[in-house]
Length: 548
Image (cartoon, rainbow, N blue to C red):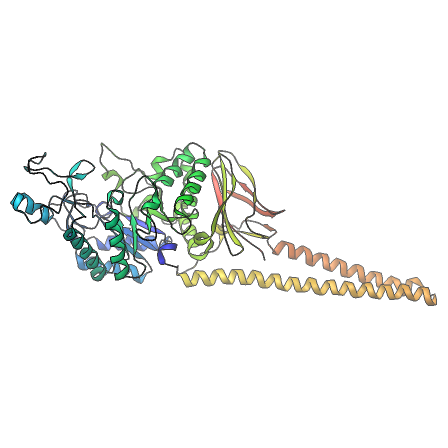
């Protein structure tokens, strides 16, 4: 299993988080200590990967690259970034950066050479459709293709072998110099497919399990995410459903998107799933009912995909575009202003722990189990065990009886399991195994007691039969021969009933929520092949079901 299959990402837009100047005027900064502080926070609440970007020298917002091989001076230095990556790896965090290969900024050396030497520039073919008979708002005396109608972003000619080799050498530099673990390809939906296939080959040859994820808005995601090209793409379709499905009280929209996407990319490709990012409004601002925050994030983590949380959204901050600008989506924040033990960070920590400790949450087969406009339950099943997520987006409590995807007699609310003290995978796994082993040991002991008790009853019945037979053969008195045998049998039956009651309670026939349970789950019970759940308004539960 590659590391990215079980990844939970924390997305940082460094120029915004660190409060850097919006324009690169030459001012230098030293912000990696702050980035490290936020990364440590991400690790504490259950993330094991960071997507940080854009990171390299640019003229303004980071996507108008000036130098691919130099960290933006407003953020820090190359040495700072190297130290940051080492620290991330030390605490179990993988690091992904932005690869902006569709276009450069106007300050990039090749574009500046064209401005100086025009038709005589050796770089005139590095960009698409450079026309020296045209002009633009910068009065360059020539025109060119761009991204999104913005002449600030000059479209690279990735069909040019020299451009391709320059970009591939850049990736080799990032891997050897910084030891990064993957790249998010900006504007992948307009990049040449052959370029991305060749890039995959370069990355595979440089570092095992190097991850490539592309920014794709619409279309058939399997065109980009497949065995020969990218490992994943941004799941904008599900992103839309996660908030509108709650705003409209329509879980059918979400369930339909899940089934459609699984039909397109299959179960082996895991799409990059998110509820907000640096380009779209914050989830807090998009939800009409803020009580739906918990359910949205349960879906983010438990549905098939690779979940990602955008910095600050774990604290429920607001943010919308203003006057066409994205900077309001990318604010400067101080970690000291937030409570890491608030309800939403605690929920994310629990969900991250589930992703880390229970393979069903990553590898389990998805199955829709119950669906109405306002209630939704699905399972992730693996090797006879399953995780069931049940949700209620109604403003009233809901009773759900959910068909089990596996044969099970025990249900545990995974959101109530105790935390580990050090947050390491080994400690969490040890705790889970101890929990399961302890339960199994107790049930084994009780089963043995039941077996012994049943054997005792069989022995009492044999004694009673012998006594009755003796009455028939020699006329012995009933009170002496039978009465004491009946008393012993009644005592054995009573003891067996007590043991049976204890066994049924311990086996998880009915699981009562502990004091640390999710408030919205009032009852969790397996009954007649179904998981019976009572949910409060606008709440949900994540349950582990198995046979013990």
